Image 1: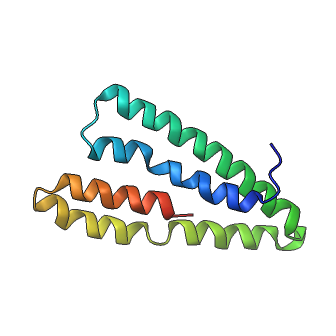
Image 2 (image 1 turned 120 degrees about the vertical axis):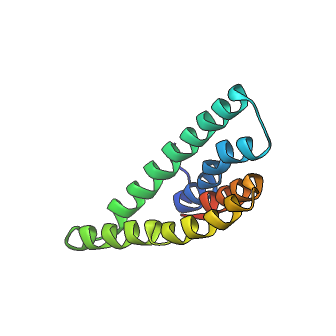
Length: 110
């Protein structure tokens, strides 16, 4: 697979990360949630492969470690905010709302 716009395809594939969480929020059974995980895994494989390939081919080797570190930091920096927002929703007994919020966060995190 060699798309002409690999970062666009990687970004679109990252929306599939939310599939299992959406399945849980919708009240899907085990089979539906498992299928969502398969879809999410395929999206992850495509997104990571294209993202890492683009990074390694377009960033000078002397800057690659630094760019990768900032990329990882940017991907993970808001995780504690998500945890902090999820707790009040769960305390109110609104697990469905928190799952939908998690799916949105998961889909747009890259």
